Structures are given as C-alpha cells and as structure tokens.
Picture (cartoon, rainbow, N blue to C red):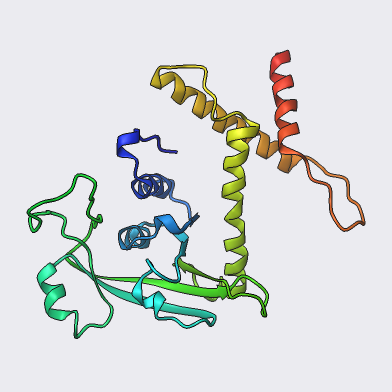
Length: 251
C-alpha cells in the first residue's frame, strides 16, 4: 500500500510504485485495474516490468484510445500497437500520414507560455518514440436483446492460456476490490481513527489492513455446511470480525 498526502494524490503514481515493489519479489503476479488507471505510460511500464501481468479496464467511447473507439460493437480479441511520441514537431508533421499516432504532452513544458497550476501534463518515462503493444479484449456483459453494454480490457496475458471466456471470468473478479474496500471501511471501521498525529494514524491504517487479511484468510480456511438448495452458506464477514475482536479482548 502507498499513503499519499492530499495535495499530491496520484493514483497512477501510487499504482506504479506498488507494481515496482511487487516486481522485486521475483514472482509472476497479475493485477486488475479500473478505467481510471489506463495510460500509455502505465501500460508500457507494466510491459517492461519483469513478472508483471495486468488486466486494465478501458473506456469504449469518449476518452478511450482512438484505436478502441474505432471498433464496432462486436467481440474482439486482437493485438494492437500504438505509436507514441513526445515530439510535438514529429506529431504535427506525421499525424496526417500515420493514422494512429499519439502525442504524449512534452515533459519539459517549455512550449507553454502560461500554464495553469491545475493542469498537469501526462507522464512519460521512456524514449521520444515508442510502440506500445497490448492485447485488446472486447465483449458483451449483458444478454442479447437488451441494451448493448460492452467492456474493453487491455492486457498482456497470452491468448492461448487466457482465451476470451477466461478473460470474462477475470474481469468479474475485479468486483472483489470494491467489496473489500466496503468491508475495510465499515465492517472493520477503517474510516474511524483514534489518533491525530500522522504516524499514529498510519499505524491504525496498517492495523486495519492486517486485521482484514487475517479475517479473510480465516473465512477461506473455515468449513461451511453443504446444502442441496439453490444457494450455499457463506460466512458473514462482519460476524467474523466480531469473533476476532472477542478473541483478542480475552488475551
């Protein structure tokens, strides 16, 4: 986890920091990211990080890469290569001949006479000219006959090991990120602190995350009664938190 001050909050920077820490473990890992993280810089960093595999959710309309916007409403599983440049001169002179050329805003800012304090240029950590390669999976998420809803995933997973059907299953797992934050904030009272100093607040945050991991592991390891009904029993996370609290109070 990464803790940032409010004035310097940057989700992509935090994601990149955590990815580099994961890569130091010398083990393959897979990360799932929502639409707010996608950028050429983060994709290329993930492509060059050893052991890093990623699945990023992308927009399919306004705000998406123009290669993705050009796709029709059909299922796709293709490889794309985007030409990215930080040279404004190259972009101006070649944008009409190279159909899918992308300009990353210049890192030195010297071409802007007046620059608002609220405006931040996109980050680019690599050479002035780069081909960013990734796999694009586009599929329908609602049954045919209703209003079309399509999802687009960007990944570097191999197609033979992770076909489109399996990519749908991986995308479905991302919802666990949302539920885990809800459990951390409310079931474990992760939004209530007893301290005022920053370092003590950090200690409470780490304690909440440690407790969340402990409760989650205990639920996974616990046996649940099997029934032949439509639904199977599940252990209530909040009740499991109460049991853990009673256990520690007796120590």
